[in-house]
Image (cartoon, rainbow, N blue to C red; front, top):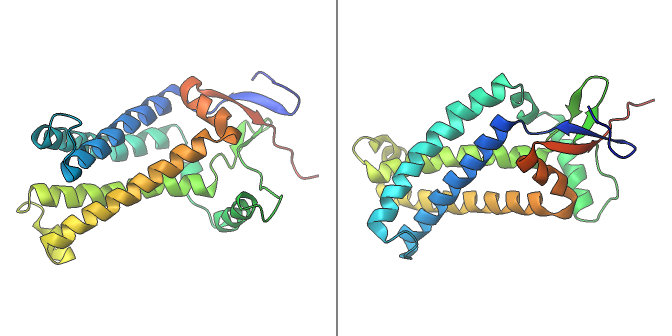
Length: 217
């Protein structure tokens, strides 16, 4: 475990399998968003409605298989899943982070530090990151179900039955699209601000220079 500048240590933040999962998911979500925009707004990005629809359906199936069984299995096997599970303390931590972000407080709770003795992260992901992760996965499930109901109304008739009619299915599909787009924009913004460049680089290189955790005296 190489030591960097004083008070920092270089550790593996994102192993190779996590990086592969992340970037495949990025491409998948990007294709779903772009093909959806082409179909709804009539833009010619991939050659017109028919081709965009075919790509949209293909990447919907990829998203379902990649975002759920593979994600849960991969993160469970590597022990990463427990880092993403929300905790009761996240509510207070989120409030502290929000105050700091808005300039109402100079205090920022300990986040993404590394305990050299225990060889593990202390709060690897903050509450906001957890919300974005699970929010995208939750809303993607709604988007897929409503999308399949529009594509195969007979097989997925229960969706229209729950929502009332196909007009509501179509409206929810569009509304959730904008929610997912917003979450993606927030994720990109937070990943690219200067304070998080180290974490962003680790999604390419795997390693990050993290602040060493200092136990309470």
